[in-house]
Image 1: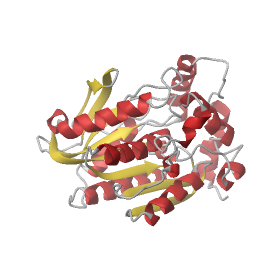
Image 2 (image 1 turned 180 degrees about the vertical axis):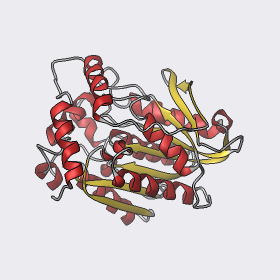
Image 3 (image 1 turned 135 degrees about the vertical axis):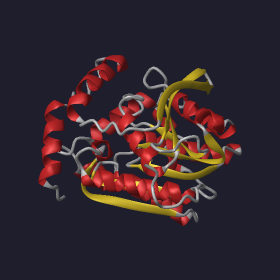
Image 4 (image 1 turned 90 degrees about the vertical axis):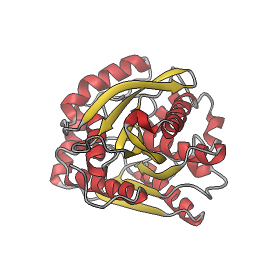
Length: 320
């Protein structure tokens, strides 16, 4: 696996400073440690936007916090709507951890973005967080003016565990008869409850995310290993992928999740779904968070923007 000196430096810094997983502590304490460290590990990228406001929308167990972004220069225009689900192994992260990504996503795509602060495991296990994500997508589709958006299909975007949630929301929307989804963008997604792929076995120390950490997160998310067969937990195990929205799947070469993300792309293609799978060679899990310093992160964001603008029939020139 080839790694540029720039990426190697980032990986070494992350390995040295990011707090290791500790199964003996609570989810709350793990989140506190990660949030405390993330600001020093991940360079901030707070692009200016026209608006970024915190709000709430109805969910299955009470209100779900969200953050609504409108791209720079959008004014009062009714925009297409993207619903974003953050990563973090269903256990970590929040609206603040992915604020830079969402700002860049709004500006590059020219879309309104609604980021979802879904319930986290282990306090709220599968499918609690997923049901929050689905409820927000459905509500946004039915109430687009909430985000200054145009009526029409929405898109779903997520990274890592958020990519898993985006894929699952697309499946649920098909199975439940809505909302209408124009595109799904899955960035190094979790798609299968398994650690048996070659990338799980060959990507380890020195590349930030490790296979055993992925399985730790699964253990926090699921109440029982048998739930790993549920297609809404493991989209790759869905018996039927027909009728799903077009997909962009972004993978990283040095990532335990690489093979399952690419396998999901192959499965979608076999089911007749329009799909693009792009592997970023030499990159690592979470590289999109490094928009401030990595050219590949900016290239991936541009690819995501092109996908979304095409799905919504927008001119390819970006807003802002």
